[in-house]
Length: 423
Image 1 (cartoon, one colour):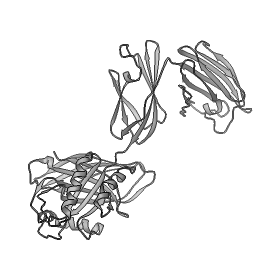
Image 2 (image 1 turned 135 degrees about the vertical axis):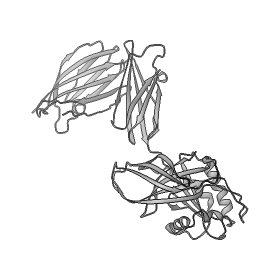
Image 3 (image 1 turned 90 degrees about the vertical axis):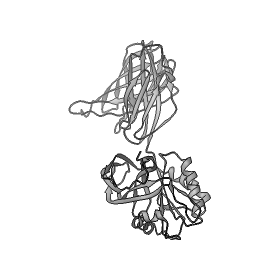
Image 4 (image 1 turned 45 degrees about the horizontal axis):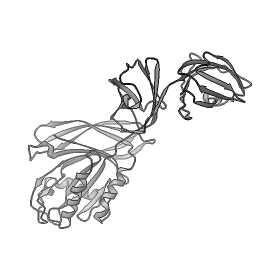
């Protein structure tokens, strides 16, 4: 078996990565430890051998240095107990061997000490899960005019990011799952090594769903719709989705209510809506004061997303229906239960002069459908397909949006949403 432990210790420009490896049947009393110490010329650090070796049930009491291959590259001081002091000299790599004892056990330790002439640290990088990060090595002290001989990459926490490509000084990372990790990039050029440290934070982009219950004959609905238009225009497409349900009051002649009377009524009953306008943000009723709508949307966008939804395909079925293929991945630590997966298609720029003076209506719900999902396990995945009736009034498909979202039926709160244009 192989067991690995990664540890990072920083002191000035010092970084340590250490791992343990045992092959075959793991010995109990005398395992071998190997690791890599990286530091800059003139830098020093004092280490605990017990921590370095990741000993959980043992404590190093004494040790002796049994070998140092090149004292011009590094100097080593044997301190009391398990403390070891290392100082970098000239650039290069040398070998250090130790014999450590805990009293009952003896351990052979083999370390490489690598002293680099250049050490760069980058700012934290936030990456949306599913996106790619491209790092320009020329921005971190790598000499553009000198050929890169090799690149070595280590992550402090594996399984969050991975290298996907390198070309012309551009190093690409893809994301695997949410979390934080440090990337240590070693770049070798004509015998000189540059070490680049980057902090990477992979997150799930949360999309807020805003639902407005409105009517073309409702006088206060007009300014509410106007405000939502402004909020939506100012919000990035990947951060806010909007659905407007036209209800039957006060004007039962609203043609957008008659598009899908049963679906609109079902959504009214689901939330218990009793007046128009009524604004719901991520399944929670918004304040009656429209001045607070933008603030509540911003607060909802800052909630951590536990689910990622991806629409993989939208296919026309006949002349009046579409099929939506999607994938939903949970990164919650516990099982999610009593879920409702919703599908909706909306239309922009519907022209109709209502009794309230509105003549252009946005994000009008054309159809929606839902499917129940009893549970989704931690790190679970659900693949599904939803179907919607869709009769295109306009040949401009960019006017239509498909929205998929997941909601907790117990408290009505939304967990995640996504949308794409039919264009």
